[in-house]
Image (cartoon, one colour):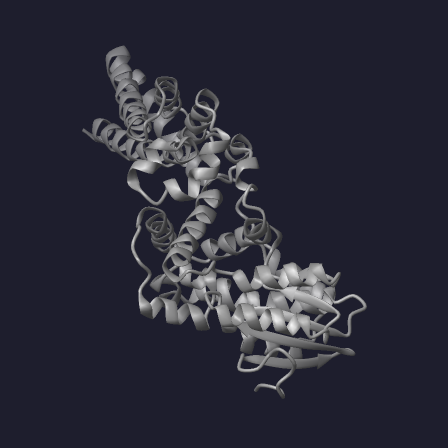
Length: 401
């Protein structure tokens, strides 16, 4: 239920919650609305608040306020630390936002950017209360089965490759909803697990962050998407646990098994098959099994790299690594091949600056060196995976034949 209208909030959805001596004014905005930008400017300009909180994390704020941030990215470090998929997901979100900006004439999240800039101009404390996007993606992915993760990945890849106008219905949902939810398309509304991680959990998280970050402020303006307004107000009023406890719970990730069972089983099957072949059939049978495994995995991994436009050295690395990496939990043929590609054809400053535009077209993916490294990673990994199943089935046929 909305509280009485405050300065600068006329006509905008909002709620006021008083707790622990602090009055929180929650301003619900549309991420693609000039009216929301104006409301934020007027609210902060009224002088009624001594702190401003926004639905952003440091990474998203940097993307909004520092256009050169992408050009300073260490791509090799991204590959080495296993964050390639996360980087691609963030790129998909950026591509979706770019299409919205071109279609509607306003930068998605402009009201959040305005809130930060207005607060800084007035020397007001700025609190970033949203959970890190990467953490949200990871928690969402951990709750989905393999088919759900495949659909999620497919949706994000579609956001990268598809260059079409955003439908009116989707835009209307965005005005009342959330940028992350909209970027997933229909899958978000069809998946309770994804909705829980992307929307409901973040309502609880932002409520906890508001409670623990207000400092000495007694009048706090929180600028959030309209889709979060009701849930955020409810948790801000009703949550009784310590905010640090709530935040830590929502930042945790399910513990993965420390024992790589799939790799152990696959290694036992493949190495056992080789041993059986040499023992029962001699050099000829054993060598044939080994050759089929190397060709199935190596050739298909190399083909994936070649399709991605990989350098000959990257293709060679893919061929050599693909038969070995499926048997080692700490190695991945896609990572090794992509690292080689990034080393041989080091992306330039211009590649990074043009990345968001280049990934809007199919040709741009092969022209841009950063995008081509990503293609190398995914297509080499895909080729190796197909090769593992192909080589494994051939080996099984030999063993039971």
